[in-house]
Image 1 (tube, rainbow, N blue to C red):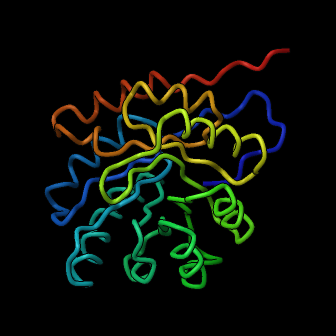
Image 2 (cartoon, one colour):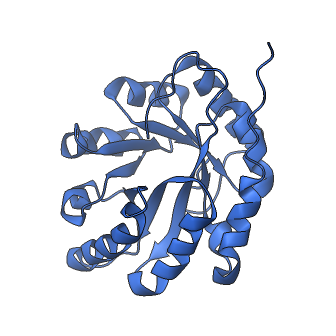
Length: 219
């Protein structure tokens, strides 16, 4: 997940960032994840591990890591920065400035440190100054609540205009993909709604891909 190029025309097409449901059975989830990865242009997978003992979580991450990384896709853990190296993951997504700051020493410089749930613009700017590899706007909190969508669009647009570090816009459904792309998101996060039916995951992601329309730049 590289930085946004300066003054590149036309703008590179955004890629998907898949956010898994809580996972504790890697063998059961692996075929569904593999199908999802084949259905669209995916840059990264954020693995949400169901609470368990460390060894079980590491084994789950390793099993799914083979599915993800063999396809040249980055595997990130949701939190658990202390498990990243042992799990062979590519990095971690940290919720809030305090968690992000605390994890930097464990992750940098070799692994990805993503910043999410930045409560204010100042927090997001601080994360960028500290070397975050991306910021994410619009993800649900622990209760499944998200900011108003117009506020998410506004935050993505502001970031894309000012900062070089990539921005991930979290889409709550297929209808939100195109507005986030137009706002300037470099990656589009797809969460629980794509996993609702394991039989239709591929079709759901393929439909979302049809909304990945990058606006043409006027001559």
